[in-house]
Amino acid sequence: MKKLASVLLAILVLVAAPSGASADEKGDLLLLKKTTLNLIEALVKQGVLDREQADQLIANAEREARDEVRQAESEAAKPDRRVIRVPYVPDFVRDEIKQQVEAEVREKVVEDVMAQAKQERWGVPDALPDWISRIKFSGDIRLRAESNLYGSQNTPFSHVDFQKSNDSGEPIVLNSSEDRERARVRLRLGMDAKVTTNLKTGVRLTTGSLRNPVSTNQTLGNYNNPETLVLDRAYLQYQGHNADGYNWLTLTGGRMPNPWFSTDLIWDKDLNFDGFAASVRHNVGGGGSLYDIDEHDNTLFATFGAFPLQEVELSGRDKWLFGAQLGFDKVFDDQSSFRIGLAYYNYKNITGKLNSLDSRLRDFTAPRFVQKGNSMFEISNDAGGSLRRFGLASDFNILDLTAEYDLARFAPVHWIVTGSYVKNIGYDAGEIRARTNGQMFVNSTSITEDPSRKKTEGYLLRLAFGWPNTLERRRWQAFLSYRYLERDAVLDAFTDSDFHLGGTNSKGWLIGGSYGINDNTWLQLRYLSGDEIDGPPLGIDVIQLDLNAKF
Image (tube, rainbow, N blue to C red):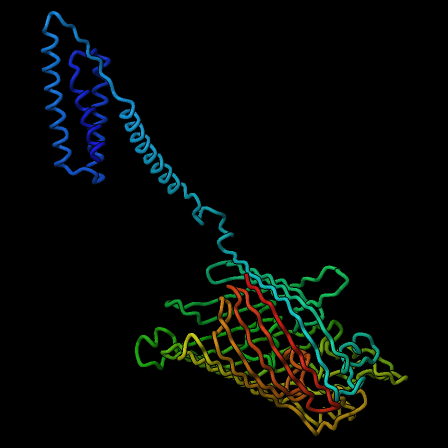
């Protein structure tokens, strides 16, 4: 700072000294003086100099300048000497002045550019097309190594593959003895778009097939042929909010995510629904303070849905699913939560109808998709007597009670207990006996079952502990569950497709865990061990190692 003060002092002295300069020179010197004084003012404003120092600097410069002027006039009065004084600004002074001016100009230019950017909204989202801000993309990919291990007590060629038999028109049996190793991939790409304030649309593409509603896996090993992408979701959703912003109403139509609070005992996690659903929520308060009420810690909810399963062109017997659920949510002070829901699902026109002799008019009553487990009967009635096509023996009107308690007291570790109980109250032994003529099959190729031995109940218990999810690095979760699902407790088409390789009439354990190896990337290992409840022995163990990534 001392050097800078010396420079400014020298400038002021040089400016004030030459009184005999020409008009042009005086103008230049005045400009230089003005610039120097402005620089001193700038230094004061920036805190480099205080006001007292600045005033002292100017006063000293003026005093020295007057002294030099008097000396110059005295020298000029001598007749024997002629002195011509030429104003001179050293190079280093000019360079420092130049740098200071450039800095001031640069700062001014930046201010002008920023002002223009703000006025013209450069880079502001609203300056982009409106539709960009209303669309959100997401996706995930899963790589899976899977082993299917069949029990040594299994009897080969003992179980009918009803799905393949219905597709081909010929009786085909399930694999029940040959172990299988598979590499599989699942890709899902989703888009949510805001249409208006309360209306949005959701679209999702996924790997999978047009024939399997409960699996989006693609098995690798198709001779390097491209895989298939299918339309997994396409729906409109309206959300109604009250004056406090509380979402009390949700209306959804199209191909939508599962609207029910449930477990995979009844609905597979990959299953989506075609149709219409409405959900209503109501805050019932019940907390100990106004804060509890404002936070909506106690909520009643009700969901209703109507879903077409199969439209039949030449018959009025379209197949439908109707459902209703009433539930309750509770959030505690420590962020633990409890949820319970009671649902009723009513299937319409789901059972098979026996054809007249050599007729195929009722072939449409065979289900479009089955896994295994439900009681079936032959609806074909050919003179040759071949097992050509099969339909469901029982009707399905299902009660489902599901509850979940998430204990967060030991956060970040959570203990999550989930339970579910199902009962098919639509099973009627008399109607089944009349419908099937007493020839009801339970997976087996040769064994028929007495309808009076109904098997219509199921339950699931699951315990998970660890982080609620493993989307971040080093988060982990372990889980253990047991399930028991009788053959006609639920529709086997829509239940979990992994345990016992899908369907009903199974019992057993699942144990596993997941670990976040990086943000949005995690590994999961599951071991599923299941056995058949009724019919010939069919034990299937499934081991799955998954690498998941979410984006």
